[in-house]
Image 1 (cartoon, rainbow, N blue to C red):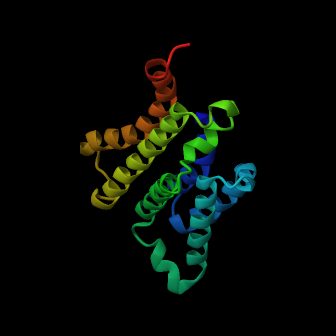
Image 2 (image 1 turned 90 degrees about the vertical axis):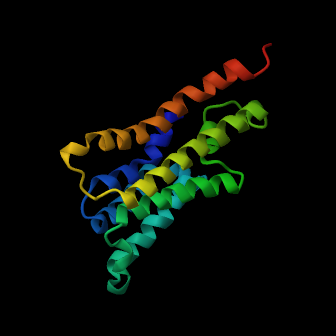
Length: 181
């Protein structure tokens, strides 16, 4: 499941890695269409949210009167967008991680409490982490000096936490909280 989620985040990784944001949005849009075509056809929440966000951002780049949307907080706004997509998936009772899990987990487990709990929890951890990163992106200076290395480590750890949690939590939960046969 982790590699599939990572593939879904490829457009976002590209977007956050390139400068300027205005040029990164169309590239992220194209990458999303290519890398996530199958999941777009299956109406996966992250892929469609990504498509919609980068489409809007690409149009904002083309229309001069809308370029303010790409302004100085472009990357922070993108983190808010990604966190919002994740929260929306939970609120519409279709947590984004469940869509990926269904590709790996046999159908007979899909309606179990454990399967649902695991996926709501994973999705919430990702959404909460991105929400914290969004807040930090607005309040931290744009360029951190070398004397601020603890902050840099913390920002990297915020990416690492949901990745590690996604790999660890399902097995741990099943081992500790599901009835033994």
